[in-house]
Image (cartoon, rainbow, N blue to C red; front, side):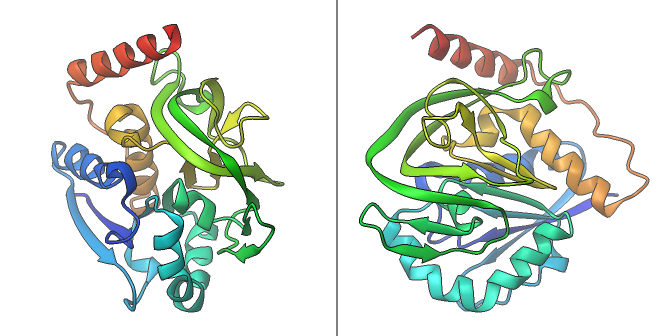
Length: 249
């Protein structure tokens, strides 16, 4: 029997707009297939041993919450997170978690906050919020989803820019994305996936959830042959209906 261990980083601080729904979705879609799942919450003062985990998740939080965890993150968890990313562990970062995985966050007043530096990306704070429904087109999901569309909800004032070796998660069809300028949203580096999409991201996009589960199982079990299909009729109808409504707005 297959087993996966999911680390939820700072679940008490980084859980904006129901980001915990991503953990619930990963868990249920595994359990429905007979895959055992263990959830390990890791917060302030807790040891982070990345080799113990198959999937690492960090959600979004406001500036206040990110200030609280900054010292703990940079002092005791920064290097293990970098090593997790470089060793191709599956990592999912949402909004604030996305920004923290980058090099730095520059506030709208010009002060610069050092971040983990696991990915070559950076964020500049703005005075205008980029908020609303979001639809993006992900090439790597085409063939699994007819259009490769991912839907979510964004609410951020930070504008993120991608550096060398980091690909966008997808092309913006509706919404603002990373910065409202270049037409792209999110980031992919090795098996690390980032997005500004709350809402939560994975409940609305089961194909993306299964993609991350598959990557984690392939990492852990070299002989893994693929996920058993689920009856996703209702999930897919909800996904398609929401996308059609947003695009027509």
